[in-house]
Length: 149
Image 1: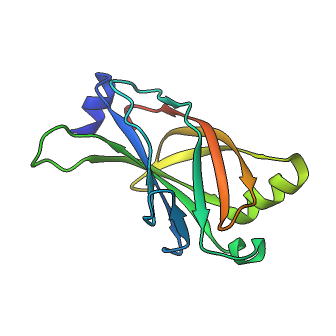
Image 2 (image 1 turned 180 degrees about the vertical axis):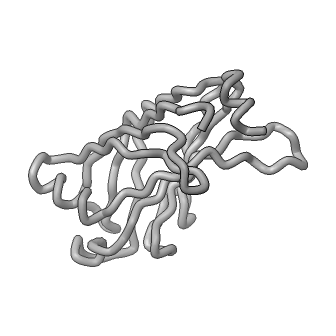
């Protein structure tokens, strides 16, 4: 039971970044997703990583209907066992772009959702860096879990 693992503090969370619609992202590794580092045995992980996510677009306008999706998973060290989902956070690129223009960066404080239920909170900040391809840099992502839900 995943809730029991969280209550014992045995989660080894990491994040997979994707987009909706798919294939909009072009991560540094050439894939359509980016994976963060695993944080070991924590219920309140903090990723002080700087990441750069490229997008296969030529202008900001093409990102208006795109969502950046962060899939939080619990790393399973067993070869035959799949990683357990913790939850998902979805960020609107339209909101990110609006904040970027107003503040030279963006912040978020969103609910982490699993199977339609709140599992915690995800906060972070980032900035849009115009390169070719278009990219978003992020750092200081953190989550706070809610157990027993």
